[in-house]
Length: 215
Image (cartoon, rainbow, N blue to C red):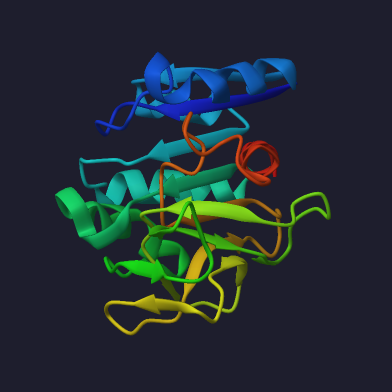
């Protein structure tokens, strides 16, 4: 049984918010994934997976060292942002993610052709890598893009060629650093609402969400 720590120590969106995440909670329960909201940063080490979903408080160097050690010990950690650096979210995520060679660009990704319901901010893509075969297509709403700086980082999701970045960045949307010794992972995602109640039942977002929690 997988144990997931949903961090709330950095003022993140809480998974117990019924309006936004009740479906994710339901699907986790159905798949034997235990999710606890954790407000004590030091207790994160007790879990298999740690989630930072839209953290609004920057990470200190000591906290980044702590998370780096968890990944070196085989843990899975995920941090998820939002588009156009709302609330300085890209900057905040970078205080942790840059340690693993992943930078949130703070831009806006649009796609006028590959999208959901005719909305160019609700982009859809089938450019998926290093994911199970049952994940063929996802919808990512209001997403930032990523830039990578380390060879240990591999792509998970890229936008279609029809997408555009307002800052003219490459359209890498989800990526993960994989520790070469422990296989621990640090996952970054350009959006934090791919698994909310609006998005999770679209395309393969459900399967994608559960996979990220159990990698």
